[in-house]
Length: 426
Ligand code: PMP
Image 1: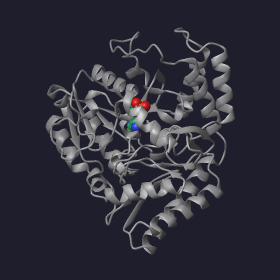
Image 2 (image 1 turned 180 degrees about the vertical axis):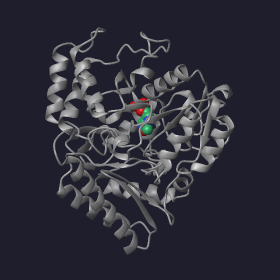
Image 3 (image 1 turned 90 degrees about the vertical axis):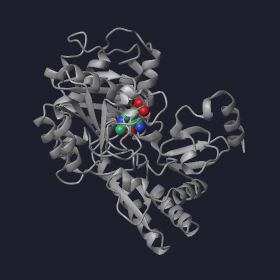
Image 4 (image 1 turned 180 degrees about the horizontal axis):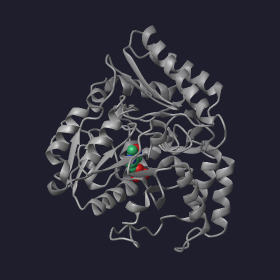
């Protein structure tokens, strides 16, 4: 196919043929990723003219669909009036007000260009504010691709860190302690041992990177309480969870409030974006007010700001979150029913308009559980779904994301595809 031809051509000039490893088909048993030419609403079209109902949503950001007219209009307007000034603009103020209004824990915000930069900056600020160095994170949680968080971003045991990536120094790895998600006791033990040196505990309040995994009741509350008892800050990485389940952050839905929060993905209407913020007393640590340096030539650029404003305006439409959750529930029910009908052990973690299907006999509440699911079967399922015209993320550790553009007809068609795929799966 033309897509295969382009995949070969891409490999000649782009390392591995992809600009982010998660786009390769390595996690689903190999093969060429599909080259897409066009997105429209909830659909992607490949270079060979095939149409897909899309649940990748570009790994999250495309919550309003690929070309929402209100966002397209904002991007056009922005492009026509200059794409980058290197000066303050009114758009930054408007967008900052929208975010601080929607997220009560945040008095002040700073915009970045990616989720990675946002999380990285929160860590620097937390270290500057507390004058401490250690970071505690949860195993399997992905927080971007800077050195510090590539420590046990995909491995198990809770020890002083060993790195997951070549090129991360031992010195850096030693600054991170990793503990299992959803278990208070190991976290408590680590804090009792090192707590007075811990600058921050980095938490995805709802996990999005070993599938969607909800916190068990009381877990986030205990993390906050214990962290604060030792004078450590709590940082929420809401890069996936922001504006995914409600208009605003997940923290207000969960009722547990961190000291600093990192944002990204769904706030930008599909343009490069990140943001972080918190109360004045902590954010005043950031340059030019304070000693923690953080900057960016492209940060707060007019295109991303105006796309972000337009995106949040769209997300204020009443009923959209309920609708996405309802669709996700229908998909969950269909997956579980297909599992039963074909005698294939299937687990679905569905949270609002997102879900993950695991081929597993046991529930998935932490990274060990997620790793212990059937990768080979997931790889075959992924490819069968692709053949049925459904585009999912090419990894058993990723979620399906509903968008406001999906229709009941798309869900019905996807359920037919699920049943066809399961009948060939065994
Ligand atoms: N944090 C989380 C929870 C993420 O899922 C991601 C991206 N998958 C990041 C941080 C990094 O964001 P970005 O890819 O925009 O740098």
